[in-house]
Length: 264
Image (cartoon, rainbow, N blue to C red; front, side):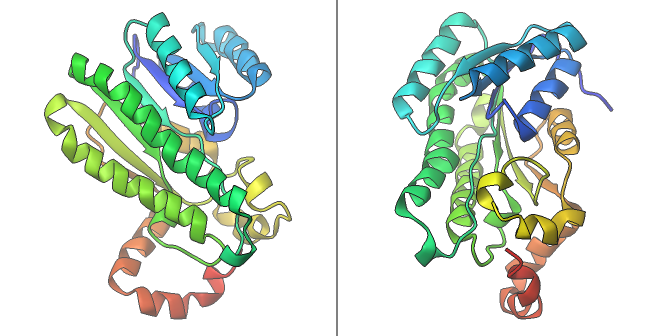
């Protein structure tokens, strides 16, 4: 079922590729207006042209480096100045690096927290007054199944996603009286360029290739649940069931699935 997003303006971070690009396309296909944020102006410009040609939808794009909070502040001010109403925010941008803690450079640890945590909280905080004033809105945070089941070589990445799940769950309770929906999206591995940094040698991708989610399927699921009260979107189902079992029997799962947990 295709959800109609006619008249809705939706901000998407990390919009130039992967899940973000697919979200932009699905939003446009549903009649919504995507407001695209990313670092690559060339890719954003190209995507704007494509959705105008394919869906007759005018999208808007803004260049921003999410590691620079001053830039984040400036771009949000610009978006709010140029658009009377913003209806939803999808915090999609994310970065990961799969390494053992003692082998991970400190600047890479900081990068993961800057993009995956601080930028998400900053963007949310900046748009919240607007949503509260309108007594409407939807905040979607792309987290990860890694935030529920941590495995070797993902200690830092998993901790950033665990933080986002906690942030999302608390935020939902804080703003429940303002008619603002808050959704966490917890995904397994998705076939995107995320792994060009996370797994440059490609060994993890090879190991989980048959389990990888397609970004188009993920984007469709998220789009279908925009402006609903969906608390969490968990994909794939078998990994969601595994994370639930892990919460109850962590020791057993770590022992039984040791080989699978060490595939990175």
